Image 1 (cartoon, each protein chain N blue to C red):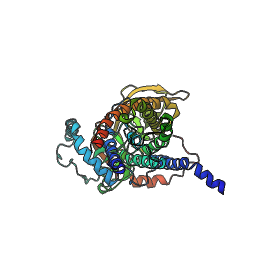
Image 2 (spheres, rainbow over the protein chains, first blue to last red):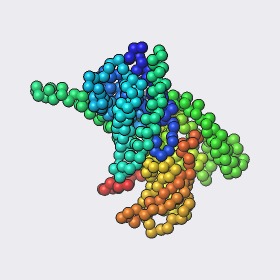
Image 3 (cartoon, each protein chain N blue to C red):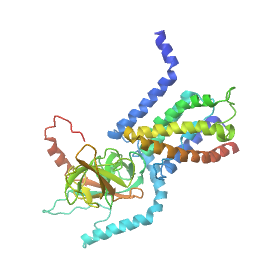
Length: 171
Length: 282
């Protein structure tokens, strides 16, 4: 399937998932489930940085509209999109990435995915809660929310990949 | 000039990033306090509709509990007005009376989207300017105060709940009559705090916290919650009063919007007060 079509469908799926399902789930302990970073993560290796940033910005914007967060998701997805090539380069193989592969846990292996996606998710969540709370006397609360949310969102993203990627390959 | 272009070429990725980041953050900062339009919030028609459809599905999860709540509210209202059982339903009603003039009217609405875990929590309700809702109207439920209307479109409105950073509803702690402002620290959706209470008076646990009704947004004496504990504020002769909200915001569905018929009169009168030289720091 065409890359553009595939990712457009994914874009819609992630917006609906986040806005209608995960925004409504409230676990407590300050956990806020966010799965939309996975969309930025799963874009092909050769995606340019400008495309990454524009897609991140607009995905965030639409999710913001649905959750009344006014630019918070846009800002945090943007910072994740900006840092994705840097972290990819740092953890990449010496001869560069294979353009036929996808940056998913199945193609790249769990060890690579653990570090790369872990760092990106950590940055995304930390920035999100930092801007949302924006008080340094509540830094411990920011850290608590970040760590708990990252762990749960991470596990959720791994589960989600099995659904999304298997489906896209079958077509 | 050539250096200038070279600079742009070299840092174009970062500049692009910075521009978008500034757009997002300025949007965030501006909309928190001064919402200008409803296009980019859940009050807009498209997102409001989508969330209403979603609520149509999920509202049934709490249906029996909400029915019990509404029923108990109905019972208490029936006790008060035994002869007008059917006038107190969903429509506005007016009483022609020369002794009492109607000051507050109530518009019913349903919460279609809500959150309680963020730092600033907003609810979307399915009533808008067509029902006569305007900005800065109060919102309450059968148990207590919910928030203030933040943003209105034709069919929907966004409520800034008491679970936001600077909600500042003026409240009273009941038997003593102390005034303070309601705040929320972002930790727990069950507890808020009241600031500005001087510590020379003792406050009993479980004394009721109600609205003061000074700003004309809420009527006087509407329940907010109960005092849970009082903590001293370091370096100031003030109590930090922790309030246990009487409303459970996680399962909230049916709310009422308060329309103060005399608000324009009150505001026009208060405008005549000369402004202070120094800005008050609240």
